[in-house]
Every structure is written in C-alpha cells, then in structure tokens.
Length: 590
Image (cartoon, rainbow, N blue to C red; front, side, top):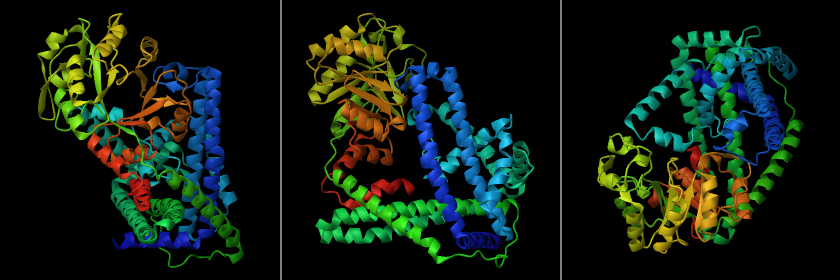
C-alpha cells in the first residue's frame, strides 16, 4: 500500500511538472483525431459506397459489400490507420512517462523518431498480434477512456439478449468472457513494453507481458482500479458542486435557468474532457512505473522551465471554446424544453412476469400504458398465422419441432415457459381480438422462414381489413422486398423494414424503419425526419439508452420495460428541471 501511494503521488507530480508537454500532446492528439482520422474515415466510407454502387449497408448486402476487392483494400487501410493512431497516441504517453520517471530530458522529435523506427512491424505478420491485443483491450479502454477513439465499443444488445436467453448461452458467454479477460489482462503491458524498448518486437512484448503478469499483475490491477475509482469520485464531486447554482436558480429565478444550464453544461463538458485526458496520462504513468519498477524520485533531476506567456493563447482558446459551447447548449436545451412524443413499444408484449408473445403479456403491456405492442408472427403449414418468435420450439417448449412444418391447431395445444412462467401459444386472431377489446394497437413483425404460401401477404391484409385495423396497425419484417409488396397491396397500412445493421444514409419507400440502437446516429435521425419516415429503435433495456433516444424524440422505442420508458418520457417534459436534463446527459459516466 505504501508503494502504491508513492506511485500515485509520483504520477501526479510528473504530470504537474510536465503539464505544458501534456497540454501540447493532448491538443495535438485531439486535433489529429477530429481533423484527420474522423474525416478520412468518412471520406473512405463514402468512396466505398460510390465504387460498389450501394446506398447504405445492411445485413442483406454486407456480405457482398465486404467481398468487394476495393472495400477489402480500404478496410485494411482504415485498420492500419487506426492502429497507427493508437500506437502513436499511447506510445507518446508511455515514452514521456518513462523519461519523466527517470529524470531524463526528452524532445518530442526524438520520441517521434523512436516510434517511427518500429513502424516497420506494422507491415509484417506481427501486426496480427497487435490487432489481437487491441481487440482484447477495447472493452477495457472504452470503459477507462470513453472520450477517446474507443468510445462505445460493445456487442449489439440483440446479440447478447439472444445469447443470454438460454442457460447454455449464458454459460458459453461467461466462459468466453472469462478467457478473453484473462488473456487481455495478462497482455496489457505489451504496448508499453513495445513502445519503450527500442529493439523489441511485438511478439517479444507479448511474451514479456505474459511473464510479468505472473508476479506483478495484481498490483497493477489494484492501482488501475484505484485510479478509476478516484477519477469517478472527483467527477461526481465536481458535478455536484458545479450544478448547485443551477439547482438554486431554476427554483428561485426560473427565467435564468436556460442560460445557467447552458453555462453549467459547457463547464462540465470541458472539465470532463480534461479529466479523461488526465486519467489517460495517469494510466500511462502507472503502467510504466509498475512495468519497469521505476525508483521513486524525491525530485526530478531537472525542472522544466515554463513561461507565463505560453498560457495566454491557451486561456484565449479555452474562453472561445467555452463561449461557443455555451451558445450551442442554449440552442440545444431550448429545443429540449418541449415534451417528446416518442411511442413506447412493448417488445413481444410485457415479458416481465409473463412469457413473450402471449395473451397475458399483451394484457400486461396494455395495462402498463404502452402505445404499441410488438408481436412476432409466422405462417404455419396450413397457411394460418401463429404468434411466435423462434423458428423452432426448442427454447420455449424444450421440444423438437419447426413452426413452418406444424399446423396452428398443433401449436395451440403446446405450453411455453420462460423465467418460471407458463402460457399457451396463440393465433394472430386471438391477439387482434384481445387488443381491440383493450383498445391498443399492435406492431406485427412477420418472421420469414422461407416456406410461406404465395398468398401470405394478401391473406394478412385481408385479415387486418376484416378486423378493421388496417389503418391502425403496423407491420414490419426484415425482408425489404416483401414489405415493398405489402405497401403496394395496402397503401393505408403502416409498413416498415427491420434492420439489425445499417451504415450510411437510408432511402426507403416504406413508412418506418426499425433499427438496432448501435447503428442509430444523429445524422440518420435527421435524415429520417427530412424524408418523413418514422424511426423505431430496438431493443432498449437500460435507462441510459431510453433517456438518450426519448430525449432525441425518435418516433418509437421498442423495449422490454415499457413502464420504465413511460416514466422517462413523462419526466422529459416542459416541467422537468434543466438540472435533471444535464444529469441525464452525463449519467453514463457514473
């Protein structure tokens, strides 16, 4: 514990003493990231779309897109660009920390030259080790540095939800996660070793990291955990103190709330960027100190010279950025004053306390106040429509059987179970009758298994007409061609396409798009509004995602937690204080 304290104090001391260097390095990193990396990535992607002739990438065309020779070459180029960015960003910080801890003078040019000498490894087979290293550490780095290039790295929720829906899936997921975490942690020192030691290869860096982890890994992880904990506590403290004036003013002098909120938000945004940059610097200091067992220095062997005039331009830049952010926040917060009208869509009914896609789930979802209730239907061998999600019975009944090969009568005799609850399989007619009695509308997803009858769409339209719900219900599917045909058959029906993946702008002829949340961007939301196409986002099951997309006022959110979503929408109205809006924006950091 005594050495841990010494390492932390020395790291803070070094960062303070070399603060001018860190300001310059982080400024250059951010400028390089936002003025080169991000624009180049966007340009290359647009070029790939133009060369291949695609308007946007979905799960239907991604295989052919990725197989195009030009796309393959561009992806390799982008991977190399990202790897080089990470290498130079972290390499600069590691080498700086190494020299600072030993009191050795350095120049940026010499660090740059040292890193350049090892770029040759990026054009050898050893680059594969670096790719594996980055892939293993992305989840960790995205947690520690949420404002850097690794932001929001995660598996799409629809994949993890399906994996976690069965006991075998949960066990497999846990086993793979444990193995990847162990390998990733034991390889964590490979990059500082590779960047600092002039003649070592990437492979040898991995070997040394693996050997070191036998004796010093626990101490390193303890230090990193302490670092992140202290960082979060500081962020929380600053947030509480800086939002106190807003808390008081918007209750005593409401007319000042908007401007005060904008200034508070601008201050917090800038402080958080600085704090995450400091965390990154502390991270590099601790990694180097533990890896090389740096002796604790009472004082640096030389003291960097600072001149006050160096900070005058910096002060001016900070002031300009602060004013610009405040003005932008005034505009943004003013727009958010009005209550969102996002539809809350209960995913497969209300699955909490019920089995998915059952009448009991439908009744519970209606009682919760959901605006729409999403269900899945498939056509049976006798041409009827059954409400069921999977193509087989295995997950919910424990029995073998394929939906497309069974009659509706056979399916309705079966009992399905999940999370300790039981219910019966129902037909689409059963659902429509109950939904009409409850005065709720359905979002019907047509699951395509390939054995549908030729009249599947006309039959569905005829059924909806017979129940007089054609202009009230929504129908969606992951088959774009079928949905285009359905829109022609029933122009008054709300028809949509389900996408699990989308990259690039959309240009559809349907009424709405249902898209997995990982691929929904602000630009896409704006484009959909301009085209007057509704956007439903699925499947949102955590407060952060629900807050985010309801605040952005997308047309609908599909969730297993309709009651939670309704509560969030109710709070995000004109009576909600600005302080709560700001905390909603930053809640992911805590």
